[in-house]
Image 1: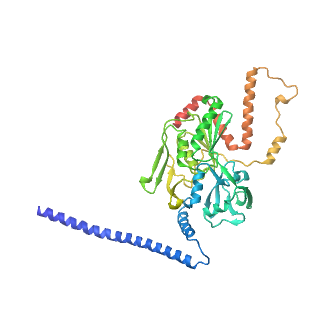
Image 2: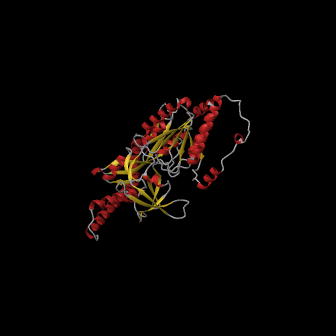
Length: 452
């Protein structure tokens, strides 16, 4: 018993020695880190006081502090930043779908402002700004070396005023100027149309109106066609959609899935992660879906495309998306300002992080630029057929109803051909749905079963 007691005491003493030997350096290292941080803060205070007292001109102390905060945030990544009270208020208005400006979503790359996407029917879109354009100058002043917020401030101005941006575009030998008239931007989150037997849903942004508007317009267009039995499929057009609210991307994805994961977010700590799952109910009732994306499809758009692709619920067509796979949290600060901080990465249901990689389409389809000369040449040589020949035999084997049906089908085909000239990617998507429909309802049902 005495030996056991002595061994226990020895064990405790040995454990104490080991703990002291291991913990000592760790505690000293932590204390050294804290001392270093305090030294850096003292350095900041010293520099701040010297600027106040010795800079060649008087400076606004609040502006200095604001610039220091913003510099700290923008050094982290292109999407973290400080929002002054006016900017925070403008952002809250923007998520409701109306704001003033040019109508472009921008980021920063290699010191220049890069256009993520122009928004539909905005001054920038009307003026011909394209996704992937680099803005090098604003009204003749270089934006190189400026923060993104500072460059955006240069592009702001009164509604109705003119701004000239200098653009570098891939495929163009020289930079060129684009004149834009600033206007109030009223974003329509969703537009819809019927093309033949296909319902096309054009989602331009993920604001708090998006899901409700999409559901209402989908139901309206299905009714216009005479019910779901008359619909051969849906096109969800996410091209040049820069993203927006995460919860809206989740709801839009959920609208076409019967279950399973939509997206997961993973932060610095495991407990900071989140997972979003779909609930039963498919607005499209199992009909085939084609999702259109391009280099201007970012963030929330990529969540939708990635979720529907991973669940095999949709065929993704177009070109590689932008690759913004990070989540920003807007945190209110004292004085009505806010901080936009990257707090997580998001992952598609299969576990893919698309940060910097983007969503790769199932079928890559480039959007060709129209060649005016080729169009004129085609128009100059109209096609001829047997029916155009003098004295050709007529076809008397068809009833009037059959002839009428053939004419209607031919008219639809001509509309698609015209669409192919205007929007090749959309026409390609519609052709896919048309092909699936031609295979019959059994194949479509099997496809839907496989997807779900």
